[in-house]
Length: 191
Image 1 (tube, one colour):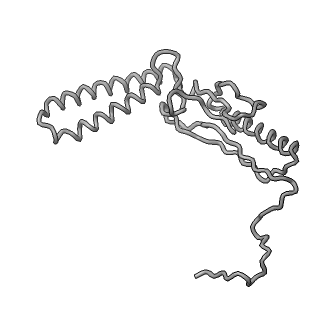
Image 2 (tube, rainbow, N blue to C red):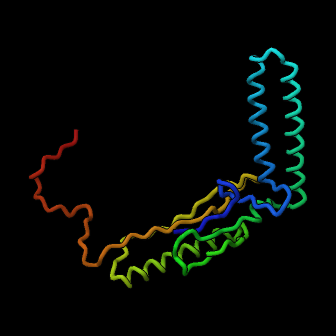
């Protein structure tokens, strides 16, 4: 159970588009082009037509420079990271009584408290469910997950997860230290 940000593609890091480029899209393209440039640089000693390869590298350098200036301009115009600004969160659990069942934007500075509050909803609902079913809560943990924005490089709250372990109230506790064997009946040594 938990809440996590929605994204585009397979990385679920944000980067929502409403038409046009976003910083995330530009950053992805920059990464691809820089990798391609490195491959060309490493191939310099292996090709016979070094001039053609140098022209390709120069063209890549121009594209990289252009994209870097577009990314910088986008950051200056908006004054904030569009990926962080447009990040949406949605609950991925099958619990219908908690918040964020539909994707919702949360301001980056409010994400930690909103996700923490959402996960506490799971804690209370799991406790109530255990009580209704005649079970006892053995342990509950809430974990907040973080990520790094691919556009601006700032850390953000990437979601949360609540884990609850229950047992039947009449079920024996199999804790460590409840051995029934008498001391000395089992050979135990440490070397």
